Image 1 (spheres, rainbow, N blue to C red):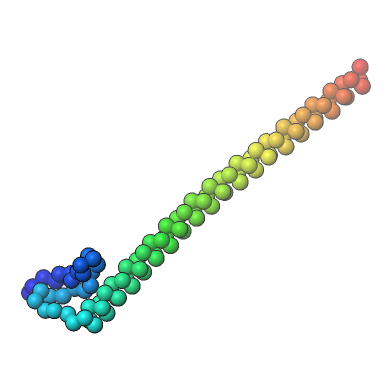
Image 2: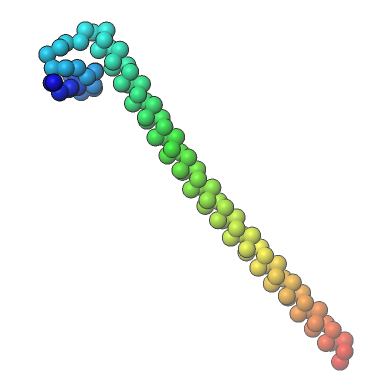
Length: 98
């Protein structure tokens, strides 16, 4: 059984696969080329979608991390403020006692 080979145009794009020695007519070649083009487009589209999804996931992860960090910072600041207030109150108390 002879091996299959790709029929290429002068520009290098694949037209169709055929058995050596059997020529495809123009319509069949065009139909085959269109099918191949559609298949490649579908592959490209899914690849791009996957890429986009991955990028968005990464972005969201980064955002989440930043949000968490900011919340931690706010909490720390609040705690510090509370401590400062407490210290100030204590100082005032000490002054009135004397």
